[in-house]
Length: 397
Ligand SMILES: [Fe+2]
Image (cartoon, protein in one colour):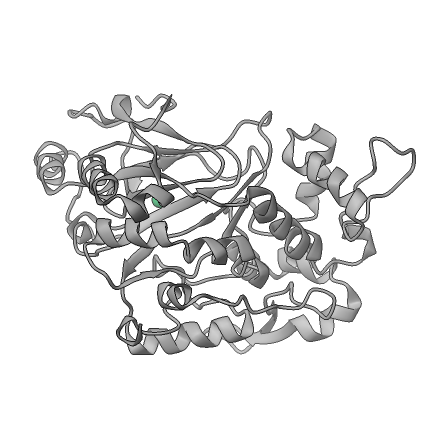
């Protein structure tokens, strides 16, 4: 039977500055990653405050709702004062409230006001994809060397990914699983990663990414599972036999603020909801893979030019601006979106969509966040940054 994963610290911390200058440090990272399928990198020069500020100012406080649903936090220091995120002094207090454990009333108030997708942990509104601190991090030289070493190629691309914003207690506890089918494991060269602006955890079974582990898993769990099944996600069932003691072996790896946890796409992992006495989680996903194709580079360039959102996540799942369940239930869509929209924005955001295989049309919405007041500003990448994001080819470096 499954128990909550016990917290654990990483064996070592690899520092980007040292990775750049000391090949032995980079080799040690590679070895630890090969052994455990997971490693911890300290991002030198990261500004976590800036990361959180960007998420709040350009994302969370830019939800397209009417006055009734706009976030208006009250000052704890000044009686009857409503905090204005555009005022520096007020923002300092907003920052304090939004980074400390939340009072249950405040938490419920905030949850009502989005962003949507908070169960998902990372909203899909365009500003969440184009956060300055994320973009600054991907042109970190040490990070490039880390990915290059682990992937064993000089031509590395990081993915276009979302920032993390998750209220405590949100999301689902997910039992140990792979985000792919068993026959698919070992077929993609990809590193997943999560950069945390405040402390978070990642649940996994260290060492479960190797071909030897997989072989043993197939032999021992094959009699209890349909392991040849083609599926998007292969999960363990806590009521079934566990001959390798995987539930006991799972750990919740502690990721301190300013650190990037990288893990193999082939590793068995899970998810634990954070308890209500934790603050909101802030960070961003940063994964990497060998250089993408010319076509993909063209797509990335367009997204970068416009501050746009890709059609699919790096996992291949389609991107939605709001939970899929709203799409299938027009009444829920109306109550969660149409009725809350700022009438001025409704015109530009809402559009009619045909339902597959049916005559009827339903409302749908474009992604929101970029407005005149909150315009998309193209981040000026270094030469390295342009190659890292795949805007330019490595052969042109
Ligand atoms: Fe997963």
